[in-house]
Image (cartoon, rainbow, N blue to C red; front, side, top):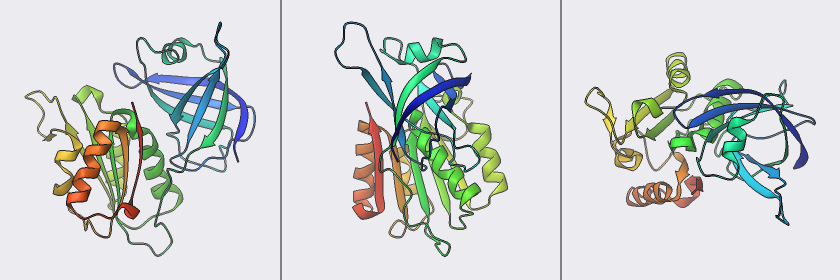
Amino acid sequence: MVVKTKATLVEKNQLSNDVYHFIFSTQDEFLYEAGQFLNFVVEKENQERPLRRAYSITSTPSSSEIKFFELCVKIEEYGEFTPILQQSELGTQFNIMGPLGLFKLKNVDDSSNITQVFIAAGTGIAPMRSFIKDLLLNKNYLGKIVLLFGVRTYQDILYDEEFKELSKKYPNFNYVITLSRADDSWAGLRGYVQDHIDDLEINFVDSTFYICGRTKMVDSVHEVLDSLNVVKERRSHEKFG
């Protein structure tokens, strides 16, 4: 159910040069599913309509934490809202509306052995973190789970240690990183996520794909999946910018 409520900033941590992890508590119960997003509603001087900014929820749904949510946000230097968020003190309140969106898990049940493939770039990792942790921690999913995550440099990798720990603890979770601007010390994959999709050791016909990132990246991934004969019913995406 969509609610309008107040969210209080309770924690913020810098993940990279321009990306922050924020934790909020809510005045009312905030029941969301993995993959959904919310809107901040900000009144601006000299504007008839309030400013609305949408962000994917990166935390994992939990019945014990129904008044908390987490966000992964890139700070845009000249943006209308993200600099405000970055500079806000703990305890600052915001008006929010949500949860919203139909970007949700598919083909998940107790007997499912379908490979779940998550392809993300940059802060497109936000809903993927929620999806993957929901599958592993809440749903005890036994099928194969693959995360293909692309960023520019090693310093830009988000939640790296967390995903490494999950891949160690859960043998069915495969974590793959590619860097588009790697330096000479990087021994892993190079290039964009779309360059490495057909290298994944999966059955493409029977897998379900989730894609999140900027429009150009999402469109390029769909082109690759078209070439691999992945039907559109087995894909979903969220794109921005």
